[in-house]
Image (cartoon, rainbow, N blue to C red; front, side, top):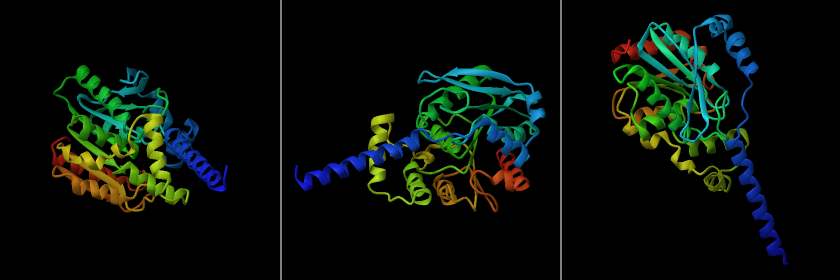
Length: 303
């Protein structure tokens, strides 16, 4: 074997190894522990009192995903079952992270549903797909809510980070099935987001890692990274959307939310929080966050 062939084999081997490394990071992203979430949500940010949450009347549920595993969550009744909110959490966390947002809508008379995305919390599923498969789980949940409470309810969906992007993909690609949406710090395009993270967190180049990741995700998890793109489908979302993002977010840049807001033709509002890192718009701007929600609900008569 000559030097050229050896060099080619070494290069090919290194490229394949890099492809596996990147796709493992994507598919099996490390999740935060329950204890970490309790410490952060209850003690650090003081979003709610743990004993109060534990004493709330809650109805657990399990739904069968189109992909065979169980989607687990809780229904928490509010003053009305004619107004219901579904909450989609971000990557690495679980439904416990949604409690602070659920409390906002319980105070506003809504009943609420918090649940775990695939491969998170108590739900099944082997990989995280950043909305590609998760959007079909959300469709299953929406259908269950309407079958149980009727098609004439007011239904809203709130999503944070990956949950917001999942929600927008559901609304733009499957069905515009809720009456309104609140998208807190979504990415607009997964390929662009991966490029940003590779550069920011790992100081790695776009080429050849992203093309290799695209190929390996197609082989290993059976979808195209380029199809995980709320931006492509936001034009199909006709019901109102409140877009929220922190100006200081350096993980998912607020420019992504601004671009989504600009691309949606109508029925939209935008709140850019002055303070807060990623997914901390509420934590660091509580009064302003609630005011933005109240203005949005009142504008479209959902209050």
